[in-house]
Image 1 (cartoon, rainbow, N blue to C red):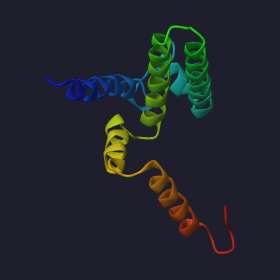
Image 2 (cartoon, helix red, strand yellow):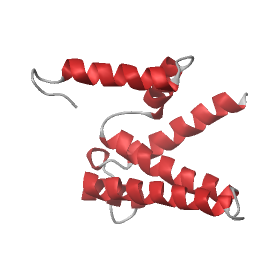
Image 3 (cartoon, rainbow, N blue to C red):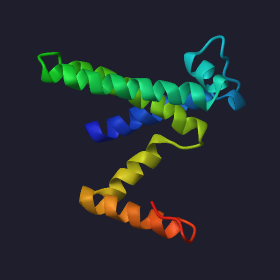
Amino acid sequence: MSSENYSADALAALAAVIESRLPARGGDPEASYVARLLHKGPDAFLKKIGEEATEVVMAAKDADHGGDPKKIVYEVADLWFHSMIALAHYGLKPADVIAELARREGTSGLQEKAQRKARAREAAPQGETS
């Protein structure tokens, strides 16, 4: 099995565990950290995503000044994990993110950004611009 397939399989397996902790599926906030975050609602897990994103930045800055770059991996894992909680809450899966990344493959980042801005302008009500 290639590492790409293993990665998708590992993400899908983790997503299934997270989904099993959803309140609608009987997730017990007394027995599960994920269920507790989901039970508290979006403010709780969105706050964690913000905290983890900051920790990724701090680990990267530390690595620039002699810190262990492997700490970035640890912090990104935390960020991905909490992002997966948000995906589950909103009825989405890691495969949706992977599909979006695949859709963008071969597209310049600058071109992608310009396309998103154009779509946002088209979607904005008449008279509004960003």
